[in-house]
Image (cartoon, rainbow, N blue to C red; front, side, top):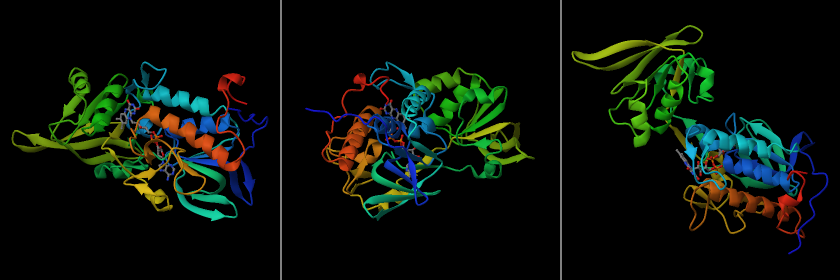
Length: 347
Ligand SMILES: Cc1cc2nc3c(=O)[nH]c(=O)nc-3n(C[C@H](O)[C@H](O)[C@H](O)COP(=O)(O)OP(=O)(O)OC[C@H]3O[C@@H](n4cnc5c(N)ncnc54)[C@H](O)[C@@H]3O)c2cc1C
């Protein structure tokens, strides 16, 4: 098989009548979208990477950054955080991409011979699209008692635990995320209290063993009923059963982590006209959807025999990008050639 020579100077993301204009738009910067962004650059395409969250990483960054992943090729064990960092570094080596974090893809239209995506911030004219939207955009389950302090000491995501060294932290929730955050913060915070409204936790047994052996204070059958503070949260009231009826305790804190889980759905993407298979976008062996020039990869794509795993999504991302390239250059080869033939992999 002959391979297409890689263009010497890839087309950069550019403006067209005030719109961003790119070869391919990648929707979602989870692990699969990040790898698609690398692959688009490797293939000499300019990409707009649209991500509804403020940072890349998708489910990994949102739900399990501190967990180890054992089934990604080449890594006997890698923390979610490190995997996302490495994927981001790999993707960012191409300076023709536009990274649009904190923007949700909302609408799809056809103008002339291009797709036009409207995000919450702008319009993007694009030859092709690779949808890597995973299980959809995440909406955190709220903690009503602390709503007034959201962003002022109350958060849904911890980020780097080291930022919270020396703080008094209250984590709320009973699933894997709550337990993992409590454990990660226990190493750096001054105190960690885990508040859960049931007695039973929905977390892995090993994590619970670590939790019970840790310095984390556990308050079960307990609810955060109020939050107090001036500019930032300074304390929460926690109500739990006492010997003589419900008891309320005021717990001083600098940080409240509301780890009550997320809901996710495809939202606007579900009405773009792609054939769906339940919650997934139906794709064929080219990773193509039912719309011309629109591909899908990762958890969002569905076909018989699909396993929703990072390793599977990486292969789909490469297939989707290579076929998006063919969509724009029908006479080219689907194979990009070997990255090992390129100095540094990037051109
Ligand atoms: C607790 C847990 C542990 C796991 N462990 C493993 C494991 O060990 N090995 C493994 O292979 N897999 C594991 N998985 C599954 C793995 O995380 C997923 O397969 C992987 O994240 C899918 O990647 P993705 O990029 O397709 O989607 P996602 O990670 O879901 O990322 C999709 C991104 O698209 C964004 N998005 C959605 N809609 C829009 C829109 N309209 N506009 C802009 N952005 C949008 C979302 O905000 C999100 O950031 C685990 C999952 C969980 C929850």
